[in-house]
Length: 297
Figure 1 (cartoon, helix red, strand yellow):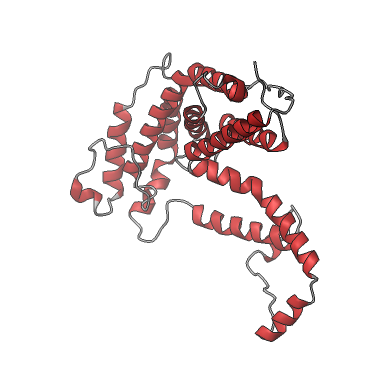
Figure 2 (cartoon, one colour):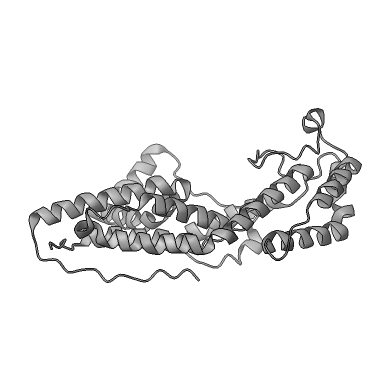
């Protein structure tokens, strides 16, 4: 039985695949109508589809085959809960549709038919929104024994609608009154990121004092700017550029992973298989990798 030589490139690919799996089982999000657990399960499904299943090349991709078994076991174990979360997310999308929130985002959850086509094209008043919400809540009766996530959502939604519906409905009668403060929070988030970038400090407490203003430094003319840039040694510039690229590589990997997990993992698997074939043909002595157990709890 032949063995596959190990080298740094294979180890890097294996590390990235493990990072993708860990990211899937530990994803979280505070974005409205976007649940980290559900997105993580869907990402894990894409990873499972990209991992190889054939045992014909067990000598070359044995590590990936064992990893695929762990991923499929995690999917099977959490499938029922993921379906419950998916259905709860669908109900959450219908609640958002009734509240017309957010108005500029189209959700793919279907429609319950609570609003007519003419009502969907024009803003609704508070009385119509309240009527639609009451009708929706009357239909939402999940079984707590088999649908615990939906049951918790139903209880929380009824409680909050009872407590805050009157304060919420004002935004449908007053023109220009936003239903939330997310745009303001997004503005301060951009200011905090900018402050961290220009200062190098993690703390952004200073934004409480001067968060409404930012100072930009620039040269008076293009020749002046070019003169300042030319004072930087080329070797130092390339070293700093290389360090910046290395620091941004993990963020770029996770960005591609979240945008298209199937394509990202398939590219890693293909790179792993190509590298394994090359090393197998080379015939160097192999050191089998230490398989890390996938924790799914």
